[in-house]
Length: 145
RNA sequence: GGAGUGGACCGGGUGGUCGCUCGCCGGUUUGCCGGCGGGAGGAAAGUCCGGACUCCACAGGGCAGGGUGCUGGGUAACCCCCAGGCGGAGCGAUCCGACACCGGCGCCACAGAAAACAAACCGCCGAUGGCCCGAAAGGGCUCAGGUAAGGGUGAAACGGUGGGGUAAGAGCCCACCGCGUCUGUGGUGACACAGACGGCAGGGUAAGCGUCGCCCGGAGCAAGACCAAAUAGGAGGACGCCCGACCGCGAGGUCGGAUCGGCUGGCCCGGCCGAGGUCCUCGGGUAGGUCGCCCGAAGCCCGGGGUAACCCGGGCUCCAGAGAAAUGAUCAUCCCCGUGUCUGCGUCAAGCCGAAACGGGACAGAAUCCGGCUUAUAGGUCUUCUCCAGCG
RNA sequence: GGCGCCGUACCCAAGUGGCUAAGGGAGCAGUCUGCAAAACUGCGAUGCGGCGGUUCGAACCCGCCCGGCGCCU
Image 1: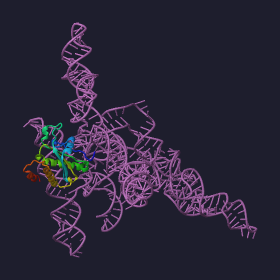
Image 2: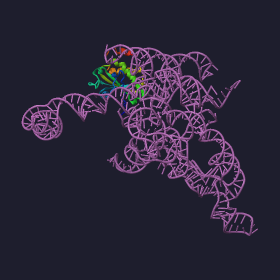
Image 3: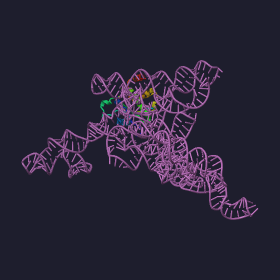
């Protein structure tokens, strides 16, 4: 009813993304909030009794991308979802399990260079202790650059 | 060469890395994996028109309501397109136009004498009639009246210009122009042209009510069709059903007790209601899923018809089908534009060649599908025609 | 995706072809008061979301855009 139009992304890898609108509302209510100039992040542990889903589906964490009408027209909204979808794939092997994340991209994320956005994204996840504490995380970053 | 005008088209290219989706084939531990192929736009947008399609309603016609509006054609259809006419803008190429009808009803503020049916405020005249002066010629008054040329108001004031004419004037008369009627010719038609006649009919407004011709049933893919959990409830059926008394030969029935559930009540006693239980079948239907859902008024090429829009015939091609919604992310390089810098050329300057740096490269994302319209759009390519300047 | 409604001052709003575009609240200034409140008086629209058209004349009629809101699974 406000500007929020929920847009979640189930693909073939849809079990890695948060798609049910009730689950998104749960994360919005219970999640820890982290704000950056490029996006906002909400995170909380996965629900203990997942409705209608198998338990093993919740071993891995899931990410939902919420893009409201405020961000812009359809081209800008699609581009925001694509960029953050790639960021989600980038960190998927290293995420700590059984967490539900929610990302709210901001308009500035579309104008900033990609390397800068990626650095903010990785440091935000690290600050929330959502990345598995692998000792080679820094060399992964350099490999991806 | 400059300025303009109409039309058609493109609207980033190449490569590396990592990904998504659909179809087909193969494998598979049914989780997936591999290969091949397809994968946004000219506006996909606004949802402004028109259709296809689906459901509902419906004999036909009329009324109401809505739309449309020069003529002829095109089309499945159109508020669309093409050709022509008329009017307007422009030197021109060309562009623009809701461009039918004022007979009826309504409205036309302010200003102005007067705003729609005829009139006269300031003026002008006062020939004719009247009165006065005068012997008369004549003069005066402006009473009766005449006039619509001039002034002024307004968006708009009952043809325009010129001449004749007159007391002053006036289509009163004449010429030209405009207008109307009739006739003729050309054209399918809108209409055009020519001739004759008429002294001029009498404002605007229908994107006010209305009239006339033509068209339109309503909703919309969230239409609609199919499959169909869990829970609750509905219909039907099968099996089973404690104890005692009484009735009945019997199946069974009646009454009472106990039990369970519900209601009343803060709780107990009590009171009231219902009955137990187990299972099966059926249809309706929610979540969810499948279809609709991509071969079509389709595209390209050739030939023919038509001024054209478009149509006809033949051949070839398959060219997005997602589902909170794929069609991409990133890096390098090329191309274009801008900014200032440097090197060189240039006598200085204007400027030109080159180099590297930085910044930028539009509008915008299918959602049932087509035909249009409208709106947004950096830069670029091809081409028709016009005007101006120079040279030959 | 489809269908529909509405935009007039800071807020609520009337007006539906012609006068200076009503009215109320809020605000500002003044009167009153020792000060304030109340009361009284006065003040405000680049022209009515924007552009274009019809008309002599448009907030009003027509077309196209912009913005906001609602309904249908």
